[in-house]
Length: 426
Image (tube, rainbow, N blue to C red):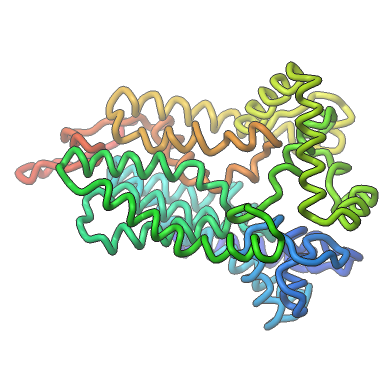
């Protein structure tokens, strides 16, 4: 699976990497804010300047991927074709390696056959290919790290040694440094594991504390850096209110209007430079909350539209919008079909094994919440796409086990039976 996925993605990389490194004024295709921040690091200016002008320290983007990209710039050249080739190839490797936690997490939850189907589905899944082989961003890295977290938490309750729980906390901390959006689901996934420990009579409170220590050990240094350099209390990144204002400013011509961002609007760029990052974001907070207080029903309406957008890809049927986003039409049918199958899979699984499907349902219920409030599109779904694929597989093939499921939601076959769990094809 890993080899097939990597070969497929590298073929795409060979076709697009020179376009990413095309000599433009701003090199935006080389990672937008991630790339500009990595440029600042590579040139010795530190973690800052998330837009084209030099603007000083920042916390608009999480640190893990920009530092990785900066290392590539230092070795292979700033915005060079070699750097584009290495970056996209590395993204492709991350995406290909995701087959491993997809396979094992699905096998833990369902069966060997389901694991094979989910793993091979990830190999050819169009969005996993596109967002790794054609886009310079943290998508593939975050999906790999978070899928490993999900795989680990499935069996965490079976680990009695505290070092395993500490390691899980450290893995969550590293994942948060890649994309802190995943933190919204971790407490609930951890709560499920701790509930199983408590039910078995284990030291659930101690294990939970050890996980928190592991997360804090990794994430706290960056939070301290933000406080000392920017005087910001944000744990990882501070850009929420910019995104919240962009999605709730009254403009529904696009799910994420370009004019609202300093990267694409010179007026906003001037405000960002003159006010500084922290004051600029505070202003966006005030503007957004004032707008919502005056237009509460608009906020509810546009938030519901973002829910639809997140799971179907649909935003607007206006000719102007579709002319600028021609791929939204086929994307709508594909995304909607996936979501229908995902819901069908969750429903089937819930009827058979509620404990087993509960972690998956936590992801699809909790992870999108910040995006329902700001703006939503398929790229924001990438951290949970591996788990979505598993639910889609269940939605297509059904779920049937020949052995009884264990109470904790994992499948424990009877040691005296040679039968294995299988997926129903009806």
